[in-house]
Image 1: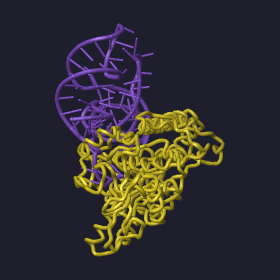
Image 2: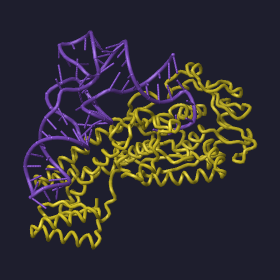
Image 3: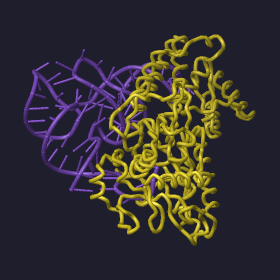
Image 4: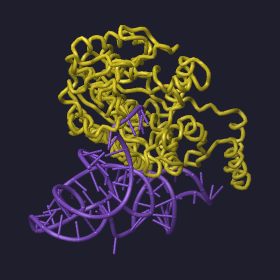
Length: 455
RNA sequence: GGCGGCGUGGCCGAGUGGUUUAGGCAAGGGCCUGCAAAGCCUUGCACAGCGGUUCGAUUCCGCUCGCCGCCUCCA
């Protein structure tokens, strides 16, 4: 079974699903107020890979990831553009799914929206007030953090040190500076909901607790998100759940940031690259490979050089799969995937998702597959190729193996060149090869004749 | 100020108390090829610095220097 780093304990621990064979995972999704950037891309890829791996191992995965469509930033954008918040949210959610499709990310099992859970949140907040864990301040409802003894678990800070180190601005409506808002009263706002505590809208930290528990139950296996969500977002989710007696998430998993020149990529530093920008220029798989080549908890540097390096590395994988395709026929369908490769792959992944090591195993496999093909050991080559194909699929790096349909004009040029080569008219054959290259088709001459493929 | 993390060969980036190499990209040499492409083979005194533990440390401990993150909206 996979072992994962649990931010709650600081240890790498074995995942033990509460329900055998089913893994329940909640991943905090985006606030849809702008175009997603590389940081969003990384978290989405990390948990996509985790999910694919767990499914590869035969587990059922219930993957829940929300869309935050109620938020101050959405409102601010709507106001500045003089339109409805729901329009803003709708627009950027569309962009979000487009980008995820481009990145070949599997859709979560459930995608709850905050706006669809307002009533449930109101009920939840009422319960917190009832048991005395939350109180009504002048401008909203606050959670009384001191109610939770273990508050600070994810921040790795004691309640006391959090209190003394709090940098939040003092708010006379709060009993303590570290208390956080569950409900914000906005009596005159257009975009607001009626509640027993006044007209307003929910705070950010409540939606995930409510939606996660609605879809996964009061306890589940994995709660994931970016490292910057550990505190305060996840800490506050946890506090609310615990106040009402839930055990909530078993493992807290946090991925590292994208960095640019050693600095965190963020809006405030305006050093971010958006995903549509990246995808527009490069093979989206290059970014996925870059993410795989670093450990998910480490900071990851991204720049055009590194994306280019990854794109070239990708060619090595693609070339290997093309070579596999060329040799594939019914006669070798019974060959089993190389178990040694799959075993080391599993060991690497089980160790806190060591994808960099797993990737190195993949590349080593590619080399030995090529060697086996070169030596004419077809059975061995195919066995390795089959293992490679499995690993590539778990990583989500596969290309759609759509039938390579060549336009007639290309076929004509290709056959013409084959003829020229046979006549040893190399001047003509090279000219034709250049023509094909211009059209986007590459040729490799092998013992069996020329091989053409789209580049 | 509190807490957490990092510093590996030209670049990115794993890993490990010792004998065999992470891996990718780039660079040099070679094989293959009509030339290429693809592929293969091969080369490069890596583990921030200083001490300590140890038969032996890049890997454990301490200190120093440098860097980053969280503590505020943030993936």
